[in-house]
Length: 138
Length: 306
Image (cartoon, rainbow over all chains, first blue to last red; front, side, top):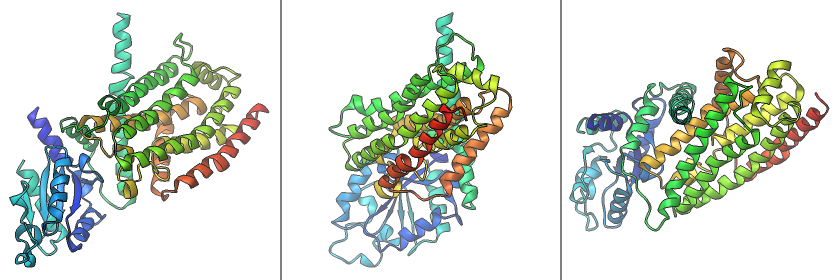
C-alpha cells in the first residue's frame, strides 16, 4: 500500500505555482518548463489552478512580512502529503534583499521546504532537476 | 444468483469498473493526441491511473462551513448515474430484443445527473470562484440541452415513435443506420457538439475555464472526491460517443463499432485542440440560435421521413 502511494505521488506530481512577491523572472522560467520544448507532462507534471489539487508547491520570491501569512495560508490549504520547492536564489538566502528590514525568510524558518533551486533565475533544466531531486527524497 | 448477476453488471462489467478503466485509458489518448498536436511527447500510458491512485491516497479536505453531505454527494451522484447509464447502453446493444426496459428518456435524464452533481457540489463548496463556475455550468446546461432534446425527439420519430432504446437499435439494424439521411447527419452534428459541451471540452469549457476561474466548481475538491469527479468525466468520454453510435450509427452491429468509436473520439479531441474558448453568452447564442435552429430543421425533415 505504501509502495502504491509512493508510486502514484512520484508519477503524477501536480504543481501549484505560488508567486510570493518575486520579480517574475523565476515565474517566467517556470512557465518555460511547461512549454513544448521541455514538456514536463512527460513525467506527469501538470500545473493546476487550486492548492487543493496540488502535490507540490513551487514557491518563488523573497519571503517578507506581507507575503508570509499568504504563503502559510496556501500551505495550510494544500492537501497533504505535499512537497515544497523553493525556486530562485531569493528563496534560499534572501539574495540581495537580505539586509532589508522587511525580509523574514528564508522559507524553512516557517514551513518545511524539501528542495531549494538556486539561480537568478534558475534555468529550466535546473528546475526539472530540482523537482526530480525532490521526488527522489520521497 | 440473479442478485449477484445484477451486482456484477452494475459494478464490474459493463458498469463501474470496466467503464472507468476504459474511460481513463481514453483520457490518456486525449492527453497524448493533444501533446502530439502541440509537438510534445506527452504522458506515458499509465498516467491517468497514476493520477487516480495518487488522488485516492491523498487527504480529502472539506471546506470549513460547507455542508459535508452535499459536498460529497456531488461526485457520488455522477458516478452512480454513469454506472447505470453504462449498463443500459451495453445491455441494450448486446441484446436489443431483451426484456430489459431501456428507456431513451430515462437515459437522457441519467445524462443530466453528472452536471447536476457538479452544480450541487460546487455550490456547497462555499467558494466564490466555484459559484461563478456553477452559474456558468447552469447556463451552459440549458444551452446544450435544448438542441439535444429536439434531436432525441427526431430520433424517436425516425424509429417509429418508440422510446425503447432496443427498438431504436433494431430499427437501424433492419433499415440501415439513421445517420445515412439528411436529418441523421444534422442529428449527428447536434449530438456531437452537445457531447463536446457535456464533456466540458474546449470550446465549451466555460464552467471550468482554468485561466479565469481556476477549476470552477472543482476548485475546493481534493483527494477521493476529485478522483471521483475525474472518473465521472472519463466514463462520460467513453459512454457519450457510444450513445451517439447507438442512436444514430447502427449500434454494435459488427466490429466496425470500434473504428466508428475511435473516429468520433478523435474528432472530439481535434475540435478541442483547434478552437479557442468562447464566452458564455456566445455559447448560449450558438446553441439556441445556431444549433437549435439546425436541430429544428432536422426534426421537420424527420417528420417528412428524409
